[in-house]
Image (cartoon, rainbow, N blue to C red; front, top):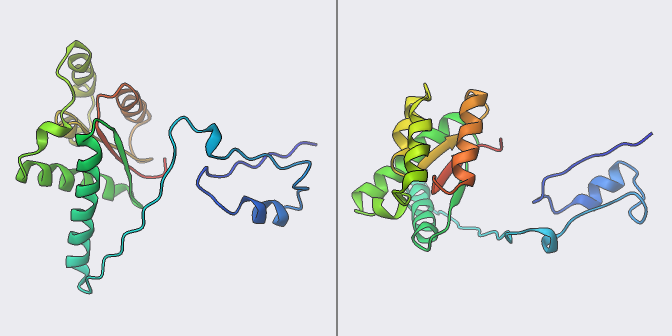
Length: 171
């Protein structure tokens, strides 16, 4: 009988999990390190020392925006992972608002060509008005509470490069 367990690509302790499951690490354990990734992963840890919870959240939003804006201004797309469904919309709206306040929305807007026009047309058919509103500025959201058709649509437009920033849960 074959048993397969898949772990997150970012989980560093796969040996511990294999040992717990009594897997022979020389015979039954297969892992794929960074050599198999088309885009390398990197981790950055940033400490926010603010004690007041509201100011702490605001400071984290500022740091997040600075990192996102730096990557998007270089022509990259960005995925921002959040812990809860409702945080996807809140974070995306906050990032968009910060870009607007800094007169930097142009960094986030995709190239206005026929392909983007078709993507806007497809997204505008969604009943998720927040998604429609955010997409025009280059932002999108994705979480398990969305309709499957909307999630598929977001995955498609992001993979095609029409959404510069995707705020999502682990979905």
